[in-house]
Length: 238
Length: 102
Image (cartoon, rainbow over all chains, first blue to last red):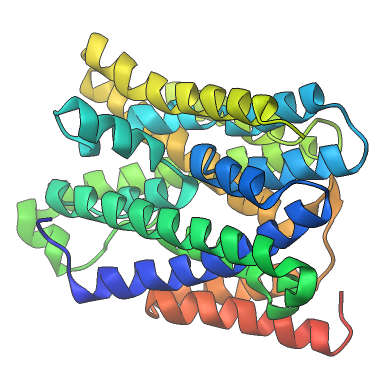
């Protein structure tokens, strides 16, 4: 498994633990909405994208049609297409592994990969995070579905803040030039200036993308605002 | 409910996931395009963070969650370990909710 260090394992364990608890709440909500335990688990195993699963169950529970629920879920998951272009290098060469790695493509595993500089670490971070989340999420969903709604509300634990905060922490290395001796040692002032320029561009793209998504969120179906954030790339195309 | 809608959602999601690796096999992406792809992932993930931190069901989510995310962001900027960032964000939000702040 290459370069898996203790810090990476600890970080992944933190996000997987949170995902497990949210999985428990998804399982409980799904069963309360009328899905059977096995359907809830089947969905978690095969879809493995929490946001779209919550949305699907929410629409069905609210009396919406399954067609609308599928459509909304797919809209939310369309972001995996550009993700796949970014992380295709970590999936490896053999087809069974690539297909498995493809299924482990979630926001967190992409963000963990993106936060690493070195290719071996990138690969290790992606697989470790994707694998740990897959196990934690599916075990959580099964436990929640079996136990029903006796687990209470994960919002009381603040877990809804843990995810955006964790993702932001993973994005920071891409947004901040490492103004330290490491960059200077690798190629002098020129490389440092290049890294700074790249980070500044990433910050502008990120900021514009976030603004686009926030402004359009009240107006458009979920999933679309995040996709519209891609328009922020225009900032980089000038 | 039967499994068909779930199978369709799963198949469509997998197709979205697979399209990227397949496309990057076919087209040899230039360094410039690869940089744009990295930027697009950053834009998507930042947009996800912003909407997840501030909104729920198309409206403002209330103060507890963004406050927790802000505390986490500050600690991340100070280069605290990832676990500390995540736990502090959740704890801040949980305490605010305990105090009755939405």
